[in-house]
Image 1: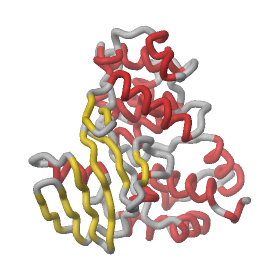
Image 2: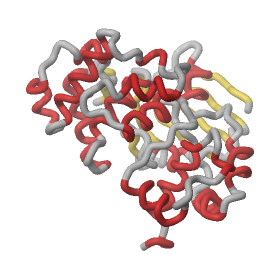
Image 3: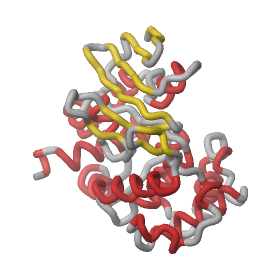
Image 4: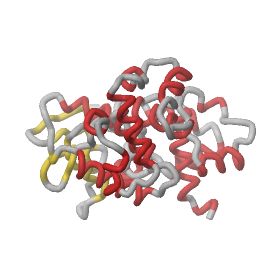
Length: 276
């Protein structure tokens, strides 16, 4: 991959099979929307940007700062060899079908707090409502970035609040879980910054200290917020996948990259006419 830097843009040349639409809109992040020109607009790391791909060149434009070349490459996981991983996963029948139909999904490397908070909000919820709650959360408590964009509020910003302060978000029962998470993260009871390097079982135990955080939210936080590719979130769709296709467990080819396998299977199972 070659990187070119411009005043308000970064271009990644020969960036492989990465597909912005599949990666940004497959249920792992909730702050991206497609513009009329086909680019994807979103906010991460307190920066509002557009992401577009033409041929094998990926362009990120907007609030681009010195040193951001590697920030976006890491966020989009452009340095991981997905071609090699997917070739390995394709030794399994079902994964081969999922990957060939939806080639180009990458696991986004989001900020751990945003991932944790987003997936607390995702519980017993649908994607449009999740996006709406997060949008209202950011507008109410994030920094104004201009142009109608707001940063994701940090745990320190939310920790002094009470659950009723979040009532305009219409988050329901999730409000008390968001506040509990903010207080435990801001106060150091939950060591969010150490989750990337902790023993996996220790990391899971760290997260479930938070009220309302069970196995699924913990696994989502570890996968999407900490880059733990061996995390394996199980929701209603993945539970069906396991019952229908893998009653004896995942195949050996997924070892160490269960999270990537899960994302392909989840997106395929949810959208494929094979099961409609």
